[in-house]
Length: 215
Image (cartoon, rainbow, N blue to C red):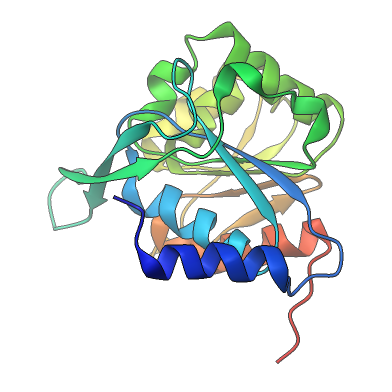
């Protein structure tokens, strides 16, 4: 469960003493069996630098949880999958107004393959794309981008198994490097192949958001 004194301290600090003078309001689309790292790391990192993040899931409300899945690379022909944590949502899906948000985050894992069946989810993604607001998607998050029809003519990084979906939707697939730690920015679209790319992915997303961190 994402809770405890350290989480409260992180949230309290991010709200009272933001590192960025102009906090952004970020929407995070979650679902059951979202990849564990790919939801928790960006959520906590964005809070840490002072942004406001609302994590939502269709059919769920603030205080509910989504189950996460841990995807790992252990020498098999594809990633392994194990049950992860419960991630607590902090906003209610049916109550959100996407027009009030500055940016969108789409984690990967199992969630995108069923979230794309919800027309409201696709409409939300389409809003951010049409308004040219920053969209950060990682791994299987590309399944939502392709289903929403927002990547025609765009360069998109994603998990290799999503390559055909990206290309069939008119996008240009950006391959992962040998260590899967590369990310790609194409205008307002920041994408990456998997959780090893978190540093590059979040660095590029923060740059598009206009967030600077001084050592």
